Length: 114
Image (cartoon, rainbow, N blue to C red; front, side, top):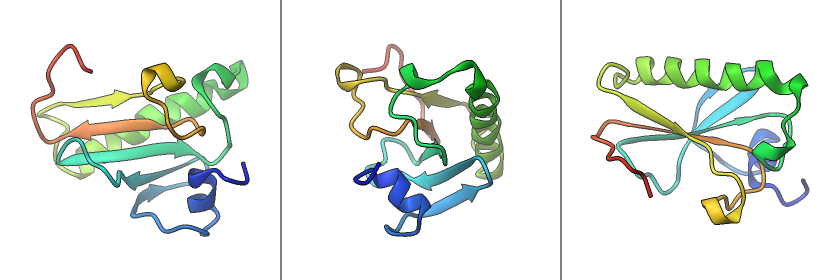
């Protein structure tokens, strides 16, 4: 946790363009956006990967998706469509070891991803 970029943003030790925060999660603009709207939503609770979630985190994960929907509505791209992505471990592209969800919108998103 000492070197966790998201924990440092939460603690105010590193800057982040915060677009939303509440007692459970923080959302920031991605520094390398892959869409016109690209936000990272992460819990204040440090969890390294999706594999570290427990039943006690069910409300947290549901909250993340409600926040994603709110951001999409508030930023005007909900109706066009958006994607919420979570990468788990290095082989899937995870590079920050604090669970986070990418919210992407504002352009057509092809399938399959990656």
